[in-house]
Image (cartoon, rainbow, N blue to C red; front, side):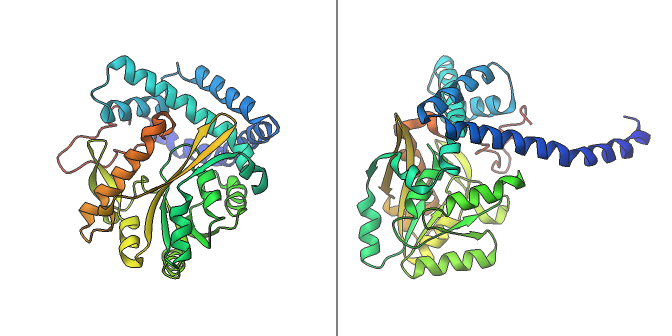
Length: 317
């Protein structure tokens, strides 16, 4: 609490930060390289093993996961909620350990990991009619795989925001464009390019369950029975372009991935944003029913609360 030492400590922290980021990047790259050299099933098993070691540690990810699952599944017993939370953490560790196969290997290899594709005729039919498609891909299963598969179905433009670990940016961007998609920045110029693509009959992918930091870019809408701050980008784009709205995800299955495309509820096209957003969250709910443990429950989806409500992660924060 002695303020005389704060400037010195701040300077010391700032000088060590680049070194810490370099070590973090080296560790991530090493794990990705290791996982890419292992058979996929072994990489996933290693991820689950890491999850079992990490689970007993009362860290941030576990606590947020438990809070989210308790809020989303209040009718389940405490033991059932805890079991699902642990399964979710293990699935997240599997996700990371299979990323070496997705990010470092060529698209032809990743395509070989896709064992089944369901509902692709929705997108193919729209493309044949010259209608644009907006794919709503929640953080379910391996969303990198669904993005890659989408890039093979037509001209695809998606938004791209560099990761916090800057050194991973080139790896991720190269991987996401390997099947033919084009990535654009999350600014007005990028949005204009994305809109132009969809209006001309192309395809765009959007994450419907990522809460925007700008309070003017979203509204509260129910998700799993809880009021949830939901971005309006997808609803606005669907309304402005007349595009077909489709939900998509790549579910983790033995030996690879099962890709699913599902038609959105008709309410998603409603001119009333509140009605459309409700359909967006309903689509996410329906998608995660088949593999609820593969949803990214450690994300603070309920962070922004309606006026007058206490913060759901207050103790965690």
